[in-house]
Image (tube, rainbow, N blue to C red; front, side):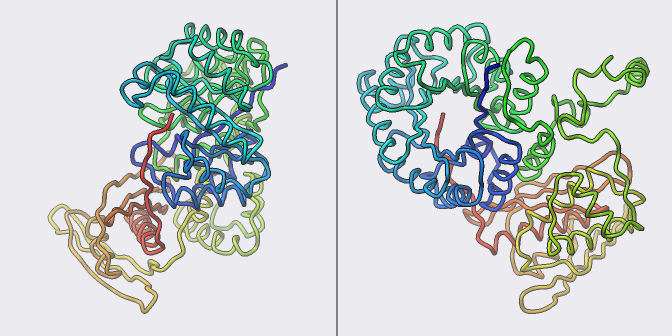
Length: 510
């Protein structure tokens, strides 16, 4: 059975999603989860894009073991040198360089002739090989490129030392039948094709990214580039969990497999959703809230008699426990730690102490703490910035005929500060009071709230995005009370502001 490599670009193409700006700590957290997931390659970022992007790629190269760590670079000396420097500490390193090959890109964007494009690609591959043994070459907008020109430039890139050749459908233009035809033609006719990996990178503009990637696998591709939850530019990329589970569930048809630990898929999905602020739709395949839910009486009856009547895979395979884990205020430290271990979290004594304190605080206010609550609690604590400002107390008075008034007590580096403010609503009043207490008044660009589970007792999880000057940060908070979770999210973001967490400048990529 053929082995298909999974190249994850969540941290590069995924972060190019509008409104997403991950801090280095958040990128490292995602990269470590991708390593647990067992992906073959992590494209950690675009080092030339910004100092923050370079620092994040460098940290991932230093701290994440297992997968190959790749960095993106245009066919430019500065890009390639910066990429090489960023991934230098990694045990397995790859430079991924690209240039556009479609007529419209060469003429309108690059303003280069086909011969000049080939010359530039060959130079870039050779230059990159001076730093690493593993070089991937991508023909940007290959989906709209001339097949024979692709054969030419890929042959030259292979002769120059490329070890992986990528065929990207950069603008999501292709359909499965034509894309499979293109991939098969290029592999069959490119000199040296048998000595390299053949990769595909598809976008979802027409809703066909996953099926285009799978069609390419049938046509001979040996690597698929994808992102967790399918995030990415415009309509996104091929969804990693969908590609992996399609190959797993229908291996009889594809006659191919991956090295992914499928039981880590749901955890990866939840982490990426939480840190990017991009909500997973309830009906999303594999990882959506309703993906394994049965409401129809006929379906429920069938599943109770035999699960396979309506389920082609089960929740446990993708890391979603079928049985609900129930913990409450009487649960002890040992039971709490055991529950986290069963979810795959290795918690040391130092990390356990604040987690258990938060758990007991929540359990006192809820009848049951579910698996989803625990996951949200751990990920919230692990991605929280150092607490320069800490919420000590919060009181809100609001009603139909009352102007909302909030009083907060916040611990600052200098003292404990109590402030009050009115607002258009209780959350607005809380945010104004906190801003007075800490002396910062950034612009609130985004506010989102959702429940971690169903029911009126669900934890409320709030995500906010704040801007101060050119710096953009994302904060998160969870609590049984939505006003409290809103306050926690706001303070988390403020802590990131004072810690210097900034947004990167987006640069066009394939």
